[in-house]
Figure (cartoon, helix red, strand yellow):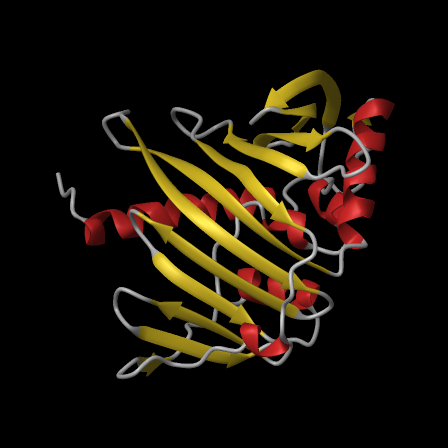
Length: 255
């Protein structure tokens, strides 16, 4: 069995793409009416409305991806993300972990992915708004973004696509913060979210469980900090290639 970084990169990517396809894109009937209790629905809407009115912010997260080997053994991969957003059309992400060390830049005109370890980058013209750029990155470039639903301007609408049921679990404590715990089901996945109590209903934790894959692997996002008043200049979101960095092309996918 191969245990080096390059070997597991393809396994990791495949697992993430499965999570994306069932957490972001519609899977069931769009006509079905979800069975969601009112408290869960109101809490999720409140979070979505609050996030939508934030014009700029920075987040630090710790994420954990599980994969299941053919032997049935589970392996966990950890990574850290620093995310900066300036609406309506700026995004920068830095990701460090066992498999990937990457940066993403979106400045309203172009989208760039930079691999620090390999010192190569790819840049492509992108749509003019953050929502459309996220759709483009996921659907056309297959850039993985589990939990990216929370970045959209209407995260409620994205999260609720093809939800079958949802309920309010109760109050919980996440990293010392009182949170509302909500649980939802889709045909292929279950997902849970913990939302901070009070006048700043920020998501603190997000878990996606792939129900019908062997071992029911999970992807977990734990938000460690929010900065709601950063000083973000526009040039912070434009990539400047390091010395000797090699430019390559994105692979585009079409349905």
